[in-house]
Structures are given as C-alpha cells and as structure tokens.
Length: 184
Image 1: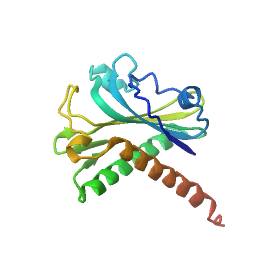
Image 2: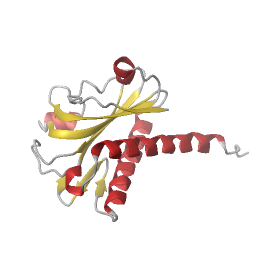
Image 3: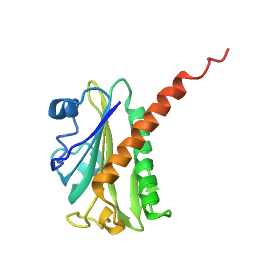
C-alpha cells in the first residue's frame, strides 16, 4: 500500500471520490491513501443517499482530506477500514492533546456537540473508496464544527502521521492474515 501527501491546495467537491483518482492525478497506483488540504463543498456529487434526501450538504472552509482506495475488497470491508481510519485520527488528536478529548460515533468524530469530521465509504466497479475530511478552521459549515486549529495541531504533520499509522495498520492486517495456520 502507498501513501502520499499532496502539497498543492486541492478543494474537495466529491468528484475526487472515484476509482483511480490517485493514479490519474498523482501517478499513485494500487491500494493507497492520499492526503491534501483544501475547502470542502459537496452538493451535487453526494454519495450518501440519506444526506442527499435530507439536503444535508457538506461544506467547510478548510479541511485535511484523506482519500483511500482499496482494490479486491467489498463495501463492508471498506466500511470497517473507514472505522479504522477514523479511530486512528481520533487516537492521533487525543495524543496531540495529551488526553481523550474526542468522541467517536460510527464514522464521525465530535468535540462536545461540535462535529470535527465528515466521512463516507463507497464502491466503484473496480475498487472501494473512503473519504474522510477533518476540519482545520471552524467556519463555512452549515452545522456547528470544531477544527484542528483549536487544538493547535499542524494539519500537514497531522496528515502524514495519520497516513503512516493507516499504512501500518494495513500491513498488520496483511501479516495477521498470513501468520496463522488453518484449523482442522
């Protein structure tokens, strides 16, 4: 599995959640996680049917975005990996702050009643994809949000730490699958 932080500002509108986005845009093929920073405005490219029906569009002035692509897994496994990624993000922020400050509810993170993250997992004809956005600023959203600035966290260093931990977890899963004998 590969990872890369994209240094160029890149806004997220949902179009990036498609198969081979990392390969076509940044020459990163295969299973990968990429991170980048930019605004978020998802309206017409919603993949969450519940949010779309309720007209709950996603918007934020500045976020750290992660796009993960896995080939050869089904949507349920992608959702489980999404939860692993969200748990890693929570762990990293709690570590930066020196104490447990966030609450995870499903695939979302909260600080009190303020939302820190957006996240979705979906499938394409050739792969499964995950998007996670973590607010940096506390502006531009239609709901109360909290951002990394409140916790004095450098977004780029944070993104790289999260991606490194995600790769480590995926390596651990791959090894755990291979190190056991079959039961008879």
